[in-house]
Amino acid sequence: MAEISVSGRMKVSTLRDQFKEAFGATLRVYKGVKFADDDATLASIRSEDAPKSGDMTIRGNMLVGNFETKFEETFGIKVQVANADNSALSDNEISLTKAGKS
Image (cartoon, rainbow, N blue to C red; front, top):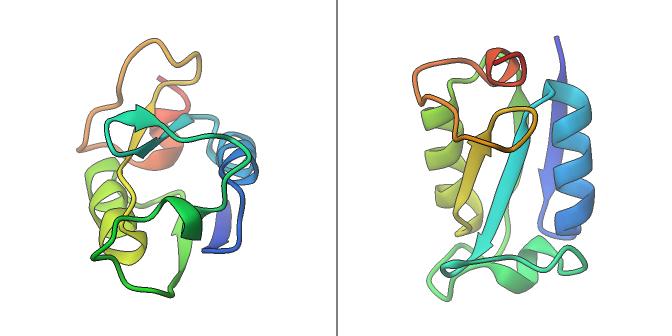
C-alpha cells in the first residue's frame, strides 16, 4: 500500500509531487484562501495558531475527508484532494487511492 511521510521541513512542491506519485490524485495546498507557493516549506505557510511541529504519515486507505481534517489539525494548513487531472474535488467518503482513479 502506498504511503508518504510529511514533515514541516518539506516544500509544497515536494508534497504535491509525492502525493501525486503515491495516490494518483492531485493535492491542492492553500495559504489562507490562495494556493500556496510551491517553493514554500509547510512550516512557513502554517496558520499562526497551528502546532509548531508535527509529522504525519499518509496512507492510501485514508478517507479523503479524514485526511484533509487531520492534515489541518497537524500542520495548520488547508488542503483539498482533487481527481487525477485536477478538474474536480474528490468526494470526502472515498479513499485517497480511489480518488486518484476517479
